[in-house]
Image 1: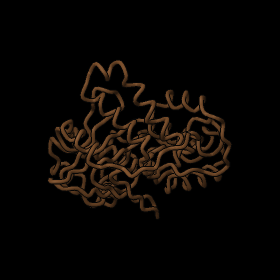
Image 2 (image 1 turned 180 degrees about the horizontal axis):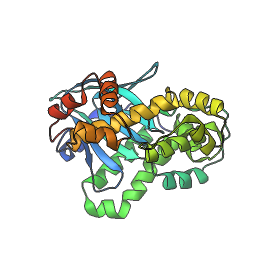
Image 3 (image 1 turned 180 degrees about the vertical axis):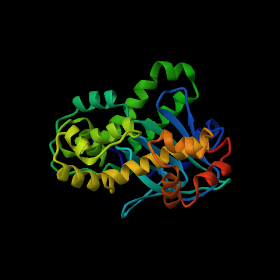
Image 4 (image 1 turned 45 degrees about the vertical axis):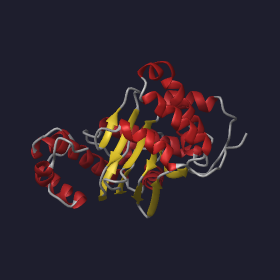
Length: 298
């Protein structure tokens, strides 16, 4: 049966999610891999990176900037973040109408099991690893059942995994489902780039180069460079630099590291080079970000 296409009802999900949000930012829930998202004020365009996940917005709006692409994902949309991509994001929210949503991590074991149960589909087209999708009635109902679990520990323990499976299943059958299917297909350029990104995120503190990354995923260096940039909008070493800088910002603003300590911990050999790269990317020096950080930063 095809998905329903009735209009999204913003107030219903927002009214149920609002009482669960106790602070701005990303907040863990009783369900592993599911986080609450809230913001009671707008935020200007700033660099960030989501882990592979579905970002479901029930109220408010966000605008993402990935290379030349502009991605609007607001109330009644979910963002498929199939790969961890550095991008820039702007948040539109206010104290009277805060941004509210959920983040559901992509469990690759669960995803693989679901894909194995769906009819096989072959496509040679490279899917978009980051795209916004309008919620249909099926997705809205599945998100509603997932929210039920967040306020009921017994229901979360008994039914939580099933509710997450429902949400992922609906996304797999949606218009951007190919981006999730090909993640676990283990063939083609898309899954190879995903494998390379997983390796980068595990070993970003080490000295890496394009040849070694390409060899790891059984591609020539030129072929790897082409498909990596096509997928992420960045050359491999540009991606590595931004990954290190984003990790360093978290160390500075969330863990209170000193600038030189953060630089070394993410793989920089020179603290001065780190400071120059940091200011060029974020528009502020690492020391400024560290001094401006508050316990509520996220």
